[in-house]
Length: 95
Image 1 (tube, one colour):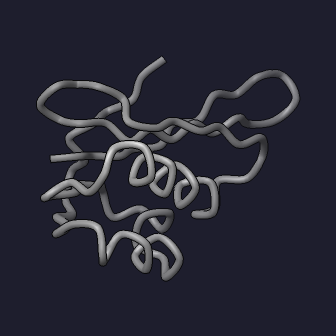
Image 2 (cartoon, one colour; image 1 turned 135 degrees about the horizontal axis):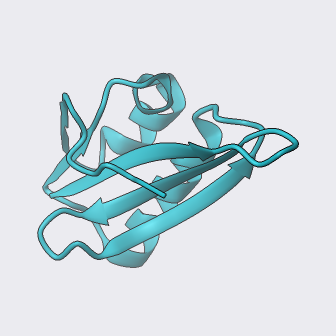
């Protein structure tokens, strides 16, 4: 089972967003990616694509219901990769 989440960091001049895709059982981060000022789904899609390329397909994928994970681009990539469960994401990123 993989899970994903997004966090923001607020330096003095804006926002930095970081997304991670993690294997829930091994706790291994399969992919992570940052974005400056843009928290749209594009960089979340890139992180998922990277994880799929490098580590194959998970059986289950869990995220929260944020727009980054429910948009057409992300669900288009994810729908062929795994069965998805929305709810409280099992991965809670913290700084």
